[in-house]
Structures are given as C-alpha cells and as structure tokens.
Amino acid sequence: MSEPALALKRVERIFKQAGGNLPVLRGASLALNPGEIVALVGPSGAGKSTLLHVAGLLERPDGGQVLLDGRDCGKMGDEERTLIRRGRIGFVYQFHHLLPEFSAVENVMLPQMIAGVPRETARARAMELLGQVGLTARAEHRPARLSGGEQQRVALVRALANKPRLLLGDEPTGNLDHATSDEVMGVLLKLVRGTGLVALIATHNLDLARRLDRVLKIEDGVIVAG
Image (cartoon, rainbow, N blue to C red):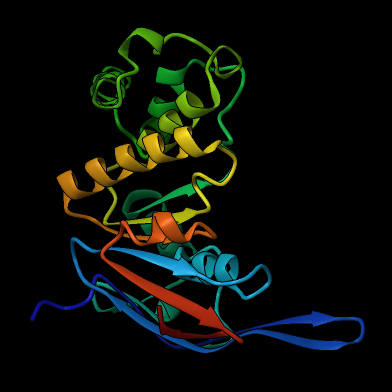
C-alpha cells in the first residue's frame, strides 16, 4: 500500500486563555491516501477548523506529528513550511476571500506569480482552470460582478492553481444556498478526482459528506469513524 499523503499522529493543540488552558485537539489521528476525498464532520467548536489549520501548516501542534508524504513537518523550519504550504497545499474557505480589486483570472494568477511562475504562464493556467468550471466568459469580471456560486468556483480553482498535493476545505459550500452548494460541490469533486490529489473537507452538511469517499467525525478533540 502506498504511503499516506497526509497523516496526523496523536496531534494535540492547546490554546492558552486567561482562565487556563483550553485543549481543542486531544490526540487526533488520521491517514488520508492519495486520490481520497474525505469529509470531516462534527459540531461547532469540536476542532474542525483547528485540525485543518494544523494539517495545512498554518499552526504548529503542541504535540504529535503532521506528516505529508511521510515527511515530518514538525522538524521543518518556518521557511520550509511556508514553501510547502504555498506549493503543495490548497485552501478553500466558507467565504471566498477573493481580492476585490482584481478580476477572476487575476485572482487565480496571483498565487502562481507569488510562487515564481511567469505572468503569461500563470494567465494561461488560470484561464484553463476557469474554463473547467465554466467561467471563461466571466474571467475579466471582478468578484462584485460574480454570483456567490461563481465566486466560490473562482476560489476553488485558485486553490488548485499551483497543482497542490493536498486540498483542505473549511465549509467550502457553507455560505451558499442548497442548489448552488450542490453545484459547487459537484465541480469540486470533478476537479479533485481529475487531478488525483487528496482532499479533506470539513462540513456540517451530512448529505454533502455522504458524497465523499469516507466520513471522519471529530468528537472531544479526537477522530472517530463517521
């Protein structure tokens, strides 16, 4: 069997507050294989977002290990973690977080250009991705002129612009109506399955979760089967 693309081993995350320490992750473990799309479910406050932040190298755990393709990210310095986060991890959030002063195509170009891709190459890649989600005709429109579903599709392809190994989604359809949510999730599944990357999607939507390959549940800071 191939090595997990992402593995968390007994991860702990503790937040210090005025009244004492607040443990959010209490030994959370999981393993995701290449090509898998996995749902992460649990009530608000269960630690879904914290787990995604740790898995995406936005936060360091207070205990345990985060391994990407077998590499222990806890042993990496900040610069190496930043490079991996920029080139090998894509993030999609509940709110699209598109830059309002830039067009759709420019929003998808920017992460590539930050990574050193030449402008024309970045534009060609951005237009290719926008075409895959039916937004070629809307490429030059700024976010304010796009619908909610169109904005989230732009955010999705922006997350894939640098051809990441891992896609992390934090309620990526949570701000959309039911019909638009289904549409965007269909696009996400098509793109992810077409690229073979691994995806971990946090969601409250159990119907959406059942469309994915597996469901994991977080309870009291630990992962249990869904």
